[in-house]
Length: 382
Image (tube, rainbow, N blue to C red):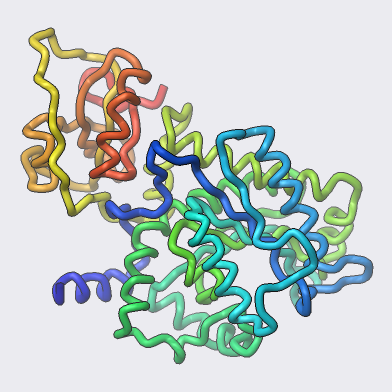
């Protein structure tokens, strides 16, 4: 246990993440996926107020539209709002933010999306950006001054208030290692979609420890739609149809995110793209539950078909490694592209539908497992 804690502390010092077996974003096949949309501010905290726009009201309208659209686009998705009126959970902002995260935890959210509009003292600053949680020591320290200046407002946690030896911090580090690659992948989808409507893409940001992300247990982001202090952004955000377009950008990103995780994507699978964007070293599952393997058929092995990818790695891993012991030697190494070129897979199937029948069992041990296509020993995406 001591070695595990030390390892987590060391990992927190570097900008990496892993997909551990307890990753909160992966839904079991027995339940629907859950998304919680958080309209920022509300009640005694209106957020930014620029001319005729009150941030709390604006993002509430966008959030309700996201919920409505998801009901049409992905009917098997459960979507909740942290608030549906001009209200707050607590008069204290830090407590209010924490309660929003706890609401999402109680709902078992697979994804948390907090929606805001931005402002800056420099009116030339323009564009959309999406923030993810980081507990990387360097990034947190770089933003210490900014976080401290906002600490009284409750949006950021002052680093001096974080006990790095506490169990709560250890758990937060573990959650971040699990979730950061997926938060970043979803954040990139949001940025790309929003920028399609003419707002500059400022990209994915990380640094300050946001209260509302720190206490959430799964992948989560804060979406900043644009700068109300910038004339161009303001004109767009207040234009006819802008709220619906922003909601479309976010809802499409949510649908794309879950579809990519659930099956075969036309492009690089979400897990791979997430790892690349976050600089993940290797994806491993360290606790193995025994899997009762079916008898191996005597038929000729397939040279082309589908398989279940369990992990990917930057280095070769023995196929008889301890983490695969539940699969009784049925793990095969395939080659892919990119940094994580070593793919370790289970089974070979003539169709994706056949592979998906065994996917639920694989996810009992490797919760980020997914179906991929192979040909002649290589993983292919088309």
